[in-house]
Length: 481
Image 1 (cartoon, rainbow, N blue to C red):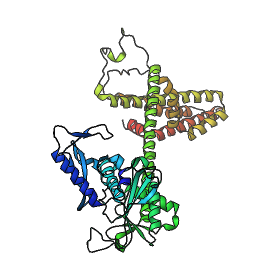
Image 2 (cartoon, helix red, strand yellow):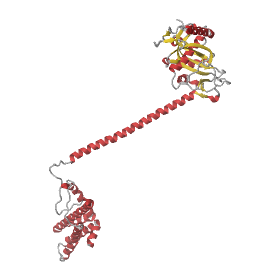
Image 3 (cartoon, rainbow, N blue to C red):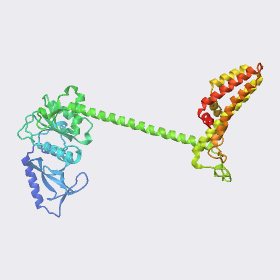
Image 4 (cartoon, rainbow, N blue to C red):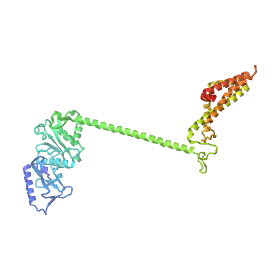
C-alpha cells in the first residue's frame, strides 16, 4: 500500500491545490443529512462537512501553499486527517512509507516529504509531545534544509539547518554567519536510542565549517545530544556553539563550557544535599540520645523511689501531721534559722564530747604514768586542731543521723538558747586549764608524779589553744559574756 509520501513524490503544489478545491466544491453540494464520516485510530467517527474542514498553511507564515485538513468538533485547532491525492489520510498514515529505500536520515525534497515534515513538527510535536519548558519550532519554509529520520517505514524524527549566508527571519537585513542547527525532534517512544546523536553527527558531517551553531535556547534533546557527542569526540570541544541571532562572536557561547558549568552546579547541589542529610541525621541522633538518657534516668529514679519509699499505713499519722504537744513550739517561718542553730548546737556538742574524751584519756595516761603515750598525744593535738577532729567525728555520725528524718523538738526556751548552750560549753573548755593549774599548785616538790602532771598540763594547754584557733568567735563571745 502506497502512502502520501510515496504518491506525492512527483506531485506539485498546484496539482494538490486543484484537487483540494474540487473536493471542497463537492462538499458544498453534498446533502447535509447524509454526511460521510472518518474513523481515526482512536475509534471516534469525525463527520466530514463544511464545518469540520478547512485549509492550513503548509509553510507557516507563507500563505501561498495550503492543504485541506479535517478537524474534530471538540478540537478545532488540531487536524486529525489531511486530504491528499483524492482521499483522506489520517495523521499516522501520513508519516508512513512503503518505499524500503527510505531508511535513516533522508533530506526532504518532494512535496510528500514536506508534508511529512509539517505533520511531524506542527501536529505530532507541538500538539502531542512537546515538553512544557520547551519553545515550539516554527513551521519550515519550502527552501529550508531539513532531513527526516526514517525507521522501518515510519518517520520518527527530523532536524533542520539554517545554512551560513541564509536570511534570518528575525533580522531581515542580516544573514547567518555560520550554519545553525535550528530544530531537532525524535518521537518519545524512540528516545534513548541515540537517534539524536545520530542527527548531530550527520549535521557535523554535512557542514565542514570550523564552528557550528545550535539554536538558543537548547532543547533538552539538543543538550543531551551535545553532551553525548563531546564525550564521544573529546577533540571537538570548541566546535559546537549555542547561537543567538545570526551568530556574531558576541552571540555565541561554547557548549562544552555550558556542560561543564552545569555539571559543576549539579555536583555542588548533590554535595550540598548530602551535607544537609548528614547534618539532619546527626541532629536526629543527638535528639534520640538525650531522650534515651532521660528515659534511663527516669527509670532509675522511679526504681530508687520504689526502693526508698517505705509503705505507710493509712490508719496512722506521720509525725508532721500530729498535733504538737503543749509546751512545744513549731514555727514554720523560721525553718532556716532553726536549722542553722541546730547545726551550731551539734558542733558544740561534738566539741564537748571531744574535750570530755581527751580529759578522760589524759587522766588515764597520767595515772598510768605513760610518758611515751602522753608525748604522742601532745604531738597529735598540736598537729591536728580540734576543728579537724570535729569534722572527722561528724563524718562518722552522718550515717547514723541520715537514717530517720525526724522532727527536732526544742524545749520552749527563748532566743538565748544558743548562747546559753555555747556559753556552757566554752566555760567547760576554760575550766580545763584552771583545774590543771590548781592541780599543779597542789603538788609537793619532789613528787614522783610531777613530771606526768606537767605533761598533762601541757596537753591541756595545747588542747585549749587548738580549741581557740578553731572557734575564735565562740570563745570571744563567751569571755565577754
